[in-house]
Amino acid sequence: MVYVVLIVFIVASMRAFRYYGISEPYSKGIALAAAFSLLGLGCLAHNHAISLVAEANDGIGISNPIVYMIIGEDRWSVQLFESYFNGAIVLNFLMIVAYPVVLTMEKKRSGKRKKTINDTVLE
View: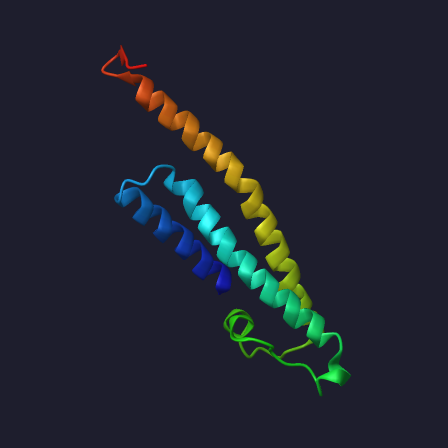
C-alpha cells in the first residue's frame, strides 16, 4: 500500500512541477520522493532495531506514527519489521540510482529543444 502511495506521490509531484513550468520536473519528483522515502527508512530502521530487543520493551510494537502508517496492524513480528525495512532499503537504492539517470535524460532532452527551434540554432 505504501508503495502505491509513493508512486502516486511521484507522479503527482512530477505533473505539478511540469504544470508550473519548473525545469527538470521528473528528476525533482524522484528526489522529493527519495527524501520522504529516506525518512520512512530511518523510521523503519529505528522500529526494527527496537523490535530486536523485545524484552527491554515488554514485547514488540510500533515505535512511531510513520511506521504505523507504513505497516499498519498486520500481525507484528520481527520478521515483518525486517521485511519492510529491507524493502525500504531496496526502494531507496533504486530511487537514488534513478535520480542521476533521469536528470541526465532530462538535460539531454532539454538541450535538444533549446538548440533547434524552427531549424534555427539559438546558441
